[in-house]
Amino acid sequence: MPESPFFDRCVLFRDSDHLTSCGEEIVAEWIAANETLNALSVKTAAARRGLKQGHK
Image 1: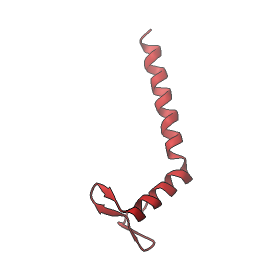
Image 2 (image 1 turned 30 degrees about the vertical axis):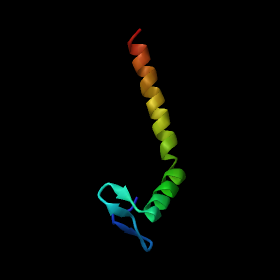
Image 3 (image 1 turned 180 degrees about the horizontal axis):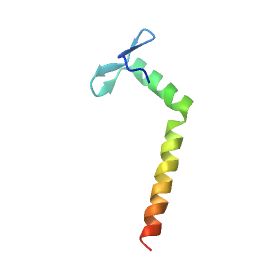
Image 4 (image 1 turned 30 degrees about the horizontal axis):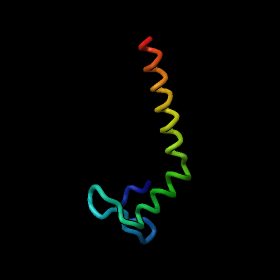
């Protein structure tokens, strides 16, 4: 993601904790393009499997 609060004529952040609607669209596109949610799901599933194995 860009480090600037502006991206392609879009102000990304409304304040320090909230995206603008334009910013939400850009972040959603970035997540989809980078399969970020899929990567997080795989890591979470692996961590849970590790916890279950450790409690046997």
